[in-house]
Image (tube, rainbow, N blue to C red):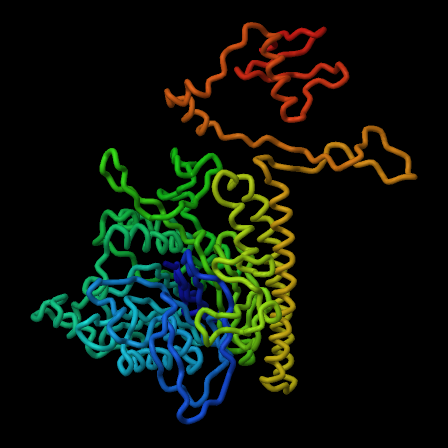
Length: 636
C-alpha cells in the first residue's frame, strides 16, 4: 500500500501523490510501502527502435513475465518515476471488487508497466491517460484497482482504473484534473465518487465505465448516468478502506486546511460513518486573505513524515495509554493491520500512518515547465520510510543512476542499470544486504527510530534530517540556476543532461556517505539501551604534553540509563503476576539499602561515592539517603 498526493501545482498520494497551489511546480508525492521490494532507482535510456521492435512486460507485483508488446519508434529517458520531459507518475493500489482482479486473466499490462511505458512514450498527462487506455484495451489488463497520479508541469491528474476480471478484456476508468491551487491525496481507497460527464477539460472517463457496472449488476439499469458513483460501484468503502487508507488522507488534509475543517470527517476516517466521504481535494490555507497558498517542497517533505500525531488516532501513547507504543512512544506498528484476540474473539486494528516502516522508496517530485527539459522534473528520492529518510535530488533527465542507489537487476529487467555488480550497482537485493547500498543503509538508520528507542532517537534524527535536507535543497536551487543559465546561453539538451547527471551522481554519493556516517553516530549514541553523550572528563593529551587534572587515558562517554517511562512501569506494577515476580523486597535497614544500591552501581561500573565525598543515593523505594561517616541516613 502507499500514499500519494497531487496538486495542480502539486500532486500527492499516501502511497504516492499530492497536488498543490498555482504558479508553482506541479508535484507528485509517493510512498511505496511494500515489505518485500528493494528500493532502487531504475533507468530506461532514451532510444530509437526498429520498426518491428518489441518490449517485454513483467509484472511489478509478482515479478513474473506477462508477455510482449510492440515497442514505440522512440522512447524517452526515464529515471525513477520521471522522464526527461518533466512527466512524473505514481500510483496507489485500491484493489476494488475481487471479481474484477485481472491477475491470471491473460492480460499483459500490469499497473507498474503502464507507468514506466507511459513515461517512456509521453510528455504530458493527457498523452499518458490516452496511452494507458489504449494499452489495456489492446493487450488486456493484468492488475486490480489502481489510482494513478500524473503531473507534467502544466497539469496534475488523478486516474482511477480497474480491470474487468474474467468478464471482458480491458479496464474502466475515470480521470480528474486537479484544480488550480488544490491538493488531492489518495491512499489505497478509490476517491472518485460521482463526476461531471460534460466537462472533458477537467474530467475524462472510459466510454463503458457506467454500462459495464450495469452489466455486472453494480449500478441500476434505470438510474441516470450522472448518478453513477465510481467508488460505490467498483471499490465500496469498508472499515479498512477508511481506517487504513483514507485516514492517511485525512491526516494530510487536516495539516493543510486545519483540524476544524476536517473534524466533520473524523468518524469516517475512523471507519465508522462510511457514508460521509471526504472531499476529493482541498485548498490549503493561505497565510494572507485573497492569496493562493504555496506549498513548498520542504513543506511537502515534512508533510509526508506524518504519523497521525496530535489527533484522535495518535498511536504514540501520549494522548491515551497505548501498550503498542511501548516505552519509546513509537507511532509504528508491526503488521498485520488487524489482529484477533483469541480469548475474546474480537478483532482489533493497528493504525496505518502516512510514513510507514515497510517502504521500498518514496519521492517528492516537482515538474517545472519553465526549466530546460532535462531539469524540468526533479524527484526528491529516498529508498525507505518517508518519516526517517534523507531525500536526494534526482532530475528526470539524468541518464545514469548514482552507484549506491542503482540496481543491477531492476524493478523489472528493462530498468536494470548494469550486469557488472560492484561496478555500476552494489551487490545487493531485497534479501542480501550491502553497506554500499543506499536501501540498506537508509534502513539501518530507520530501524533505530522504531520501538523502545523512538523517543531517544527522534530528536537527533529530526535535527539531522532538517539540516541535511535543507543543505540539499540549497544545492538543488543553485543547480537549477546553473542549468537555466546553460539553456539561456544556448547549450543544447544533451549538454544540460550531462551536467544534470554529474550533479545527481555527485550529490547522491555525498549524501550516501553522510547518511552512512550518521548511522554510525546514531548507533553509537543509542547502543545497548543507553543514551551516550560527551565525556564528563577530557581525554589526556598525548605525550609529551602534560596531563591535565582529572583527565582520562581513554574516551569515557557519559552513559545515561534510559529505562522505561512512568506509565510502562505502572503497567508492570499493576500486573499481579509480574509485580510479584519482579518486586524487590524492602531492605531491613538504611545501611542495607545503600549497600544494595552500591552493589547495583558497581555492576554497571559506576560509583556513587568518590574518595569519601558525600553523595545522595536513591534507593529502590525512591527514598534518598546521604552517606555520613560510613552510615546511611534517610533524608527524605
